[in-house]
Length: 409
Ligand SMILES: *Cc1c(COP(=O)(O)O)cnc(C)c1O
Image 1 (cartoon, rainbow, N blue to C red):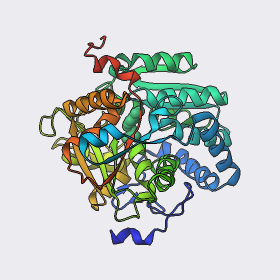
Image 2: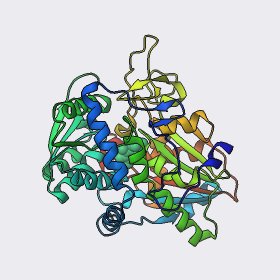
Image 3: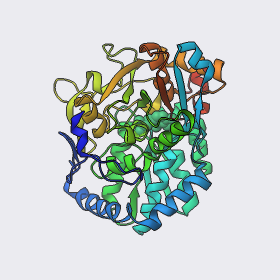
Image 4: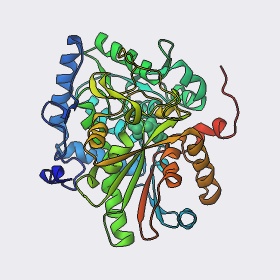
């Protein structure tokens, strides 16, 4: 991909050498498409982000919390029995071992540090699987901030343990009943709240989506994942670059973080697993790249699940964290330019992969991460390949799905 020769990537995880452009565009995707009432919030946020992202004391505070509070670096684990099963060399990046059980905390810490510096007192967030809500409630407890989390009513019902954790952490969890009552609707309500409280409120967005600067901000905080993978691979194999990096995509934050430092490395194949649901042609899917069209959602241009009239369609996935009708603009751009390969992984394939990892490696993955593992059954790898799979989170929250217990309505 000659395109990326222009971007010299600095190993510092706060480097600014990848897209977007100054207006927040990744090719034709991204940008800022928000009502006027939100424009000033966005401009102030971008100013603060650009001011602090390269500030040494900000970086120091971020690094220290990553190490002492989150527990980074997370291990890069050589999965011997899984490697034997697939006759290749599989390394698992253990984001499931982060404090609160997923990669979401990396971004939540970065944004809450920014919120503090901007003098905000109140934090709002949306959540799907509840992982981002838990991460946000956690950092708000840590920093003494007031916290409100919007969550689709359907997700509140299917992710009970996380709702209870958020409440214990002191967050006000607000069930959203409008629309399909899932993640997309929770984002709408959070954006409305932000319009109504522009002065004292910080909107802590959980994925690499939304109007600029959110996608680049989230990508930068999550890029600590690929930075660590390179160092750890070098130590373990003598090479910084694997043949493959595989990650699941909901909004695209763990994938962007796992891919980030490899994007300019042409030899590294990057594979994104999107949620096929019951099949990309079944009408019950969240595969926005495979079957979506270009459109605008939540303040940015990207690939969106839409009908012929341009109405956003209800996404479906067995996994609450992948149940989003759009995808981050950077991922759309990387797919459009051919830098990443996108594979749709259906519910049953993800479930199978979860049971395989659990039975032969003793690791219960999050349902979202199981979609990345599902790629092992869909692609062919050589015995000499080095394959890194980003295990974005742990499966405790998904036990009832794994055990086939119906969710309470
Ligand atoms: C939220 C979540 C995802 C999906 O979000 P991305 O922004 O695409 O990473 C994936 N895995 C886990 C464990 C999550 O909690």
